[in-house]
Amino acid sequence: MDIKQEYIRLLNDSWQLTIEPRQFWESRKSGEGDVNVLYRFFLPIVFLVGIAIFLGELITSPEFLLSYAISKSFREIAVYLLQFFAASYLTNELLTSFGGSKNMSLVKPVIAYSLFPFLLVSAVTGLFPALYVLEILGLYGVVLFVLGVQVCFEIPEGNRTRYILITILVNFFTFALINVISWKLFQAFFAYGA
Image (cartoon, rainbow, N blue to C red):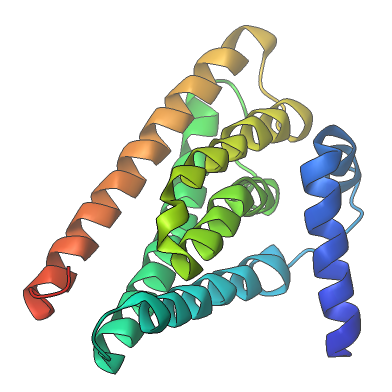
């Protein structure tokens, strides 16, 4: 595996996903692209977020707290990984309730690619915490999710809108729950910095 080619592919996928999302989803549905989205797309970006948060904490913190910076970056990595697996499972399970059929091989890419804007914004705000207002741009992930569901999932037309709304709400509350629990655990260890 050539690392340079992998990063070029990762950048190309990210660019096409951001600029031409409908064409991107069409190509994914037809079978183009990689099958293992977790290792070839999601994990590298999650680790980039972790590194950005680590560096941002070291740069902007008035005190040099190495263990705090490491723990904060690991917490963020864990939150996104848990969110990926929880959202994939819940999204797949909800398909049958709305007339679709379970298909984890399509669900995982939709979840991973729709989390991309959130990850990108987390990397920027992790490195430069003062730019936290940019986190609103992560909501573009909702648009990517809606387009991914419309193109990739076979759900009856009458149920599609309800499926999208319910799935977004369920995944939002799951993400909020994971974040609150992980933040409370983090505060238990680092009450002075959380």
